[in-house]
Length: 216
Image (cartoon, rainbow, N blue to C red; front, side, top):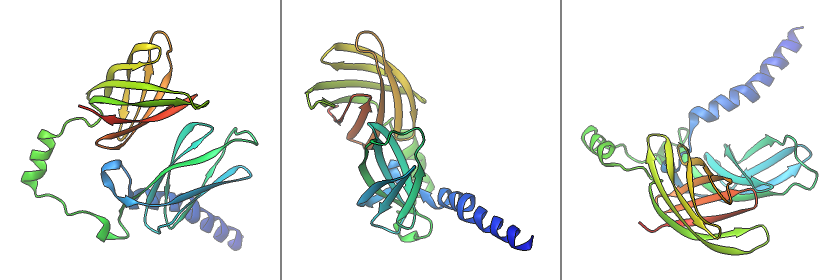
């Protein structure tokens, strides 16, 4: 009985305990990135095996059959369960970014003094807000120009999306560096947005993806 209890305790430490540790250790919002890394992903039975070329915390953004996913990798390796996937599902790495890591204090930039921090809070504008332009490519490789005009109020995002089917109104919600919006009218669809930096916005939907650059 004692051996079984010990095994259960070790199992808890290596799963739930490890997950909690990585959450407290890593700060992986886009404004906490301190560099880039190289990641790989492999499908092993019903698991995704994700590796990073750094032992520091890293955020790996990837796709499974065109659907965006995100994994925080610690110590160079992480696994994710794959639920309801097809045998021929495609796993593709989009990006790898090194995060601030509590285990490596040198990666954390110096904190501003209280005065400058208050000033930064007052003057900071929503990063998603503005006009974004770029090219959309669908799964067949065809492309056309996109112009997105976005406005943010709290966690709500509104605006317009202009593409090959005309201009659609959009609305959705912001969660850190990610947002989900829905287009209305002809060509209505749901779109996932990811803020890479203050001037780069990646997006994806069921049949295509692309990158937008801030123009205003």
